[in-house]
Amino acid sequence: MYKEAQQLLNSESEDDRCAGIEMIVAVGRSNGIELLATQLEREQSTFVRRRLIATLGAWYLPYTALVVGRLLASSDAYVRNAALAIMQTLGEISLPVLTELINHPNCDLRKLAADALNKIAGDAACSLLLGGLKDSDPNVVSTCAEALGNRRDFRIIPALIASLAGTQNVWVAFSMMESLAKIGDHTILDVIEQYVNKKTWNREERITLAGIWVVATSQLGDERQLPAAWEMYHNKILTMGQMLTLLDQLQVRGVTLDLEQVAIESMLEVFFADTLKNSAVHEVTAAIHITRRNCPALLYQNLSVMIDRFYTTETVMEELGIAVKLTYLVVEASQRDPSIYKLLSYMYEHDPYLEHRSFILDCPEIFHSDHYTATWNWLVDSLDQSDRLLKIAAVRGMCRMGEAGRHYLKELLELALDEDRQMTELIRQEIDLEWRPDR
Image 1 (tube, rainbow, N blue to C red):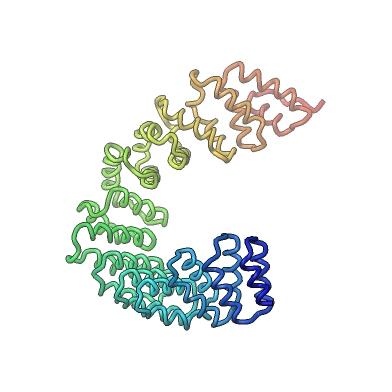
Image 2: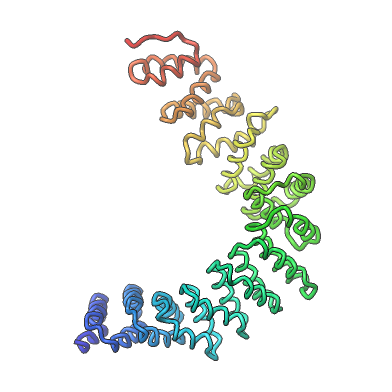
């Protein structure tokens, strides 16, 4: 039968080769593992490769790990990645082979072993990764540190802190600090801050490390880290975008920034005046959040600039719409601003939630004579929707459209008397008509 299976594996037909794989599995002999591994090395079809990976990954034998482990040394990246996926699927069965590979003279094989261990649970795999923190190759150490962070095990913290203290490689340090942040113990923030401030780092290295300090502080910090953040910002170790992101995330987590009000407003004024045009989208959205919470008047003052700059950027426009809704800036605006109507129009056309349109229909800006036709169409469309709040807003909006709007509502009332008691009541209340019983 093996001879027949080999013939099928040599066929040009994908179906035949898959049938050969199934035949080998049905026989169940260990030498079939070698046949499948050899086929994986030479196979060109993505479909058949996937079948081979799944089959070998389900063959839970130590011999499978031994054979597949050899493929990690392949010069073909696809074969290496396939072998890695199989070793990860085999789990603890792979540990004897991975123990040898994590101590192999070849640093590439040691790194691949660490990648495989990243997906294998248990203390044995964890112990191998902890040993990898002492490796001489920075890529291996970083991979082990990242894998340990993914376990989110508090027992790992002392080993990571000790390794962090002993490394002078900025990228290895970055990986270790990122892993400490993932584990989630806020006590590590002081350790990370002290490490970032070591005098041995040059300016560029400090800037790199400060980036992960921002990530860790965003996730775990509170107002106690703010003095250090402002100092790094004023010393140009943190960018304005990083500072905005940090403040935004702290506020999302409920950290009070009342004592930072003056400094925040000063920074935001610089942001809107000089930095906005070159900022990334995530920095702009962070600035919108902070401005809305801390100095909403500044948001209104810069609304037109932001809309002109980001009108085609959906994320920013959505954030502006939410900010305006939450702060009622449009409702409270004392003078006309064309940019507000532009924002409202965008929100009406793009907001996927129809109930949000009730806010737009309450805004006085849309009832200016310049927008009469568009507003009329919005109101007619909204009266056709099922959302009650939207209908209420549309009825009230029609009342603000003058005699034509009231006439439209009276006609609608006549049609609704027999069919829609709710709509009848809504219109009656708004145009002060006496109740007319069902005919």
